[in-house]
Length: 133
Image 1 (cartoon, rainbow, N blue to C red):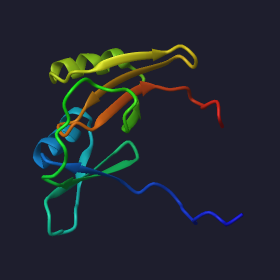
Image 2: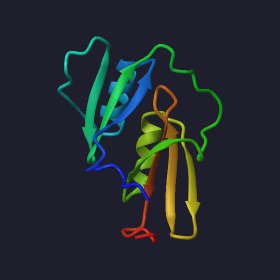
Image 3: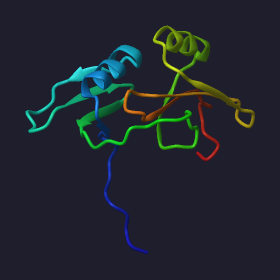
């Protein structure tokens, strides 16, 4: 068997964006990320940090427009929150449509919604120790 790569940790998640300014405000105002210094790159974007996650919003006018219902089985960013009732209340205040689910096995609550570019986000209550550890 070949050895695996000598990896240490996740550095960032890159998100392609048609709407860099809307995304910057969304991740800051709605999700509580803070903007961090970004190198002087030759394209617009934003670097945001929160909850141990760095997000690089990368301007790309070719990012496909997402329409239709919120889907729980799409690629998504998932973040733990202990109070999903408060998450729902604040999403309603921000006028962000969302979809709630509950997984009985594991007692996992989930709220799915989208960022301004249509990237799916999940906020959930997860067990302290996943069953696979």
